[in-house]
Every structure is written in structure tokens, then in C-alpha cells.
Length: 377
Ligand SMILES: Cc1ncc(COP(=O)(O)O)c(C=O)c1O
Image (cartoon, rainbow, N blue to C red):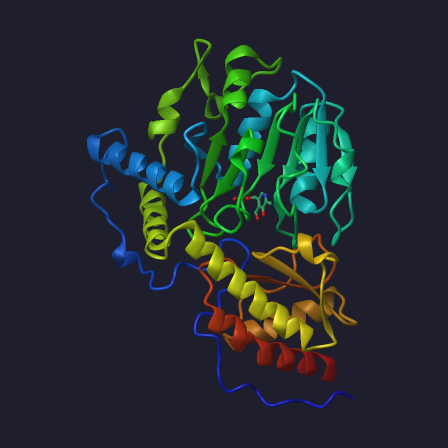
């Protein structure tokens, strides 16, 4: 029998370690949000100004070049990615690259909904597929950071500058945490609920010039619902990229995102966000290295996520992890640390910028405690 160990004295100050919606920025409180735009038309001057400001802040913090448009769309990251798939795919062959649950979701939609018969390049949880196998004369769908396996692409070097197809990067748990070579990305999507610690509900769609060209020159064979329509009379609906949303947005979610983006700027923008995420991942890496019963699901360190860090727990099955996570939640020591339901049983600890490194450090003894307690039965 494993010896029980004492309940650690010190708790993480903010036990929010969920991989989405993620912890709010430090110092956040709803009272700090600007509310002048609420209860008004989103097309009134104040609403449009705040939407445009949010877009400008995202561009600035992401260091997005002028070549790329950025707009707010319905349906969180899923809505943004589906919008891109349904409006642009079908002109040429499609390759989907999947190594965890969300990438697999895009495979399903390309194959079963759009019936595109995609080439699928896969790897198991913990691994990155062989990216040299990708034929870039195809449109290529991939997930920059696989949130459910903690495996990411190390950079965009695998994407040729002279590709014929378009690249579609589901980047929801990657933006604001890694450098992204935007010249290699034709379409990217994300939701505020991840690294910014914002709200779900809205997605963000980034389009490079070749994606815009595709939209203006190609009409898919299938019907498009209004919430997906980015083209009007053969031209890109430019208003969407200035804050004239397709339908009514939540201005409260927009104000919440503005709070997170202004906080990001106060840290020095992207560099500041990346530094926090790097420090968190390093602190968690140290905890893992010091314990022989904990391991990283991502086999190769170069592909290991710095946001959604997925861990193996020796001898643990789904039931063990459920009890482990429930114990930590009951103590208010750590919330939502069980791995994703489709992933191998293990832990997933968010290390994005809104988490404080001290809280990751304080988590270590709690992991020991929960492990010993569940083992002791
Ligand atoms: C890689 C990835 N894609 C898509 C989604 C779905 O995001 P949303 O619920 O914001 O639509 C998630 C959410 O966790 C994700 O991690």
C-alpha cells in the first residue's frame, strides 16, 4: 500500500488549469469591463468602434502582417474553421493531417460532410505525423497545437513558400503562445477562450491573400448558410474584417476580449505572453522531471505543447484519473486537469499566458498528494 501523505499547506492561488475556457487574465473581474457598448445596436458607432478596436488589438498583439485580414465570426473556433472549410474547399484535392481529437474532427467533416475524399495523414496520441509526406498541391488542413494530445508543429518550416494549395491552420490553442510565420498560413482560426482567457461564442478568422483570392474566384457546389457567407456579389465582404459582423455578436464577449488584449499589451504583447507560457511549461516540466510516475504524452520535446500540456500517469486508467481530478477539485487545488475524454487516460494542465507560474509550482505537491491518495484507495 502507498503511504498517504499530508494535504499540502499551500494551494495554487488560482486553481483554474482548464484547457478551455482557460483561466482569466490575472486581475480580471467583470466590473473592470467597459460596458458602454452594451444594450446598444452593434451597428451603432460605439459598437462598431469597439469591434474595430478589438480587431486592431488582435492584429497588434499577434503581430499579424497587413497581408492578412482578421475578422470576428460566429461559433467560436469551430464556427470559424467550418466557415473556412465550407467556403473554400472543393476546388482542389484535400489533405488533412490529424494527430488528436480536434484534427480528427476536421477529417470527419471533410470526408463525411463535404464528401471530399481527403488524403489523411495521421499519427497516434503523443506523436506528430511525418509532415514531409504532405502534398502541398492540395489544400492542407492541420491543427497547430493539438489541444487533446499536447503535440504541436514545431514551426511552419514544413510548409513551402511556393505551395499551390491553401493551408488551413486550426490555431486556437497556438496563437498568442508561439511565433507563427504568417506567410505560410492562408487561413487560421482561433477563439478568445484559449490563450487570452476570453469567452467562447465567437471565432476569429484570419485570411491571407490567397484565401481571399479563392473566395472571390471559386463558388462551392454546396449551399452555404448565411452565417458562413463571406462573399457578396463575387467580392469579399470586407466589412467583416472591420467589425461589421455577419450577425449580432456578444458585445460583452467583445469587451471581455478587449480586456484580455489590453492586459496582453501591458505585458509587452506577444513576447510577454510567450514568456509567461514558456515559464509555465518549464515549471511543469520540472515537476514532471522530478517524479518517475509522471511523464509527457508528447514523445518529442520539439513538438511538446507549451499551452495544453498532456501528462501520463503511471498505472492510471480513466477511473483513476477521474478520482484524481475530483480530489483536486474538491480541495479547490486544481480544476479541470483530467485529460480530454477521447485522449489516453492522463492529465492535461493548461500553461497558457493567463496562468501564473507560481500556481503551476504550487500544483506539484498537490499532484503527489492526489496520486498517493487515489493509489491508497
Ligand atoms: C484544437 C481545437 N480545435 C477546435 C476546438 C473547438 O473550439 P471551440 O469550442 O472554441 O469551437 C478546440 C477546443 O478545445 C481545440 O482545442
